[in-house]
Length: 156
Image 1: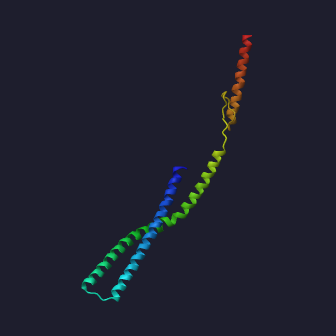
Image 2: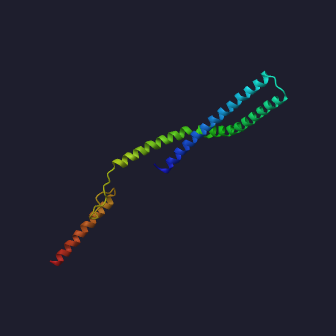
Image 3: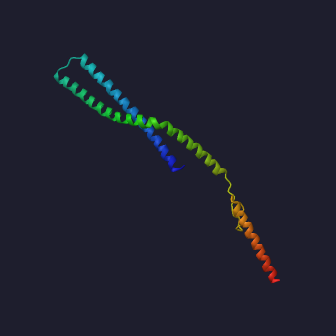
């Protein structure tokens, strides 16, 4: 398989990895949101002293910091996925399918191909798409026979 095809396959793999990372980050944001809701309900429904309140506030702050970090990463990958991957993924799939079909046809042609030499062991052209070459070869042979005939006549 040609190197260019390998690059296209790697690009397709990269598109898939970007989509997987997008999904992972989206899920992580959702989990943070659910944990935050759990924590807020815990604060709402329970009584606590100052030390417990501090721990709850600290836990909420750490959760919000984690969510912000994930959300920043998500904003970047969302832009890449939306503006690049979604736009070109289908086209890349079509190109890969076409290349696979073309490569399959070429493999078949190569496997079934029988090569016929264009010049035989005597140095004569036996196959050529150039009629001019074939005609020149006939003319050279004719002239060589004439020269041989003249030489033969002179020696007799």
